[in-house]
Every structure is written in structure tokens, then in C-alpha cells.
Amino acid sequence: MLKIRKVSEIVGMKVFTDGGDYFGEIEEANLVENKIDGWRIRIAKDSSLAPFLGGARGLIVPHQFVKAVGDVIVVSKSAVPSKEEAAEETEEETA
Image (cartoon, rainbow, N blue to C red; front, side, top):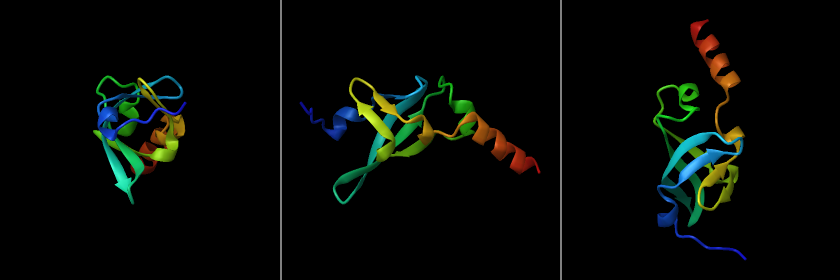
């Protein structure tokens, strides 16, 4: 059975990647034409992904990358910049 949740119930929920990494907490929902378009996630300081996101305090994840909503939210790891992408960006900046 499908359980319907209010957006206000989801704000503040913990977010994890499908690889099991802690990402942060839902800060806000982005709505377009009365539908959820994306989620603004506040990156936790103790997140293992924080070093790869530079000095960013948050990230907007499109709703199609959300895999599950329950006690926590699970997003696809492809929604988060990877270690390789971060290394490539720093190489390009230094070149």
C-alpha cells in the first residue's frame, strides 16, 4: 500500500546514498507546477562526501534520483559528485 507523506514531514529527514554513505538532511523541497522537482539537501559536516563537494553547504538533487522515502531518504549515488569527478575538477583548475 502506498503511504502518502506531507512535505513538511520530510524536511529534516536524514539522507543516505544507495551505497550507504551518510549525505545530510533535507532542507527544502523545490516545487514546479505543484509537483516535487528536486530536494535541497544540507550537507552534514561529518558526511564522508563533504570533502568531494568543496566548500558547498548544500546540493540540489533532482527528484528522479530519490530511490526511497521511509524513515530516511535514499538517493542514487550518481546524484552526488564522485571522488574521480572531484579529482578531475581539481586537476583542471590547476592546469
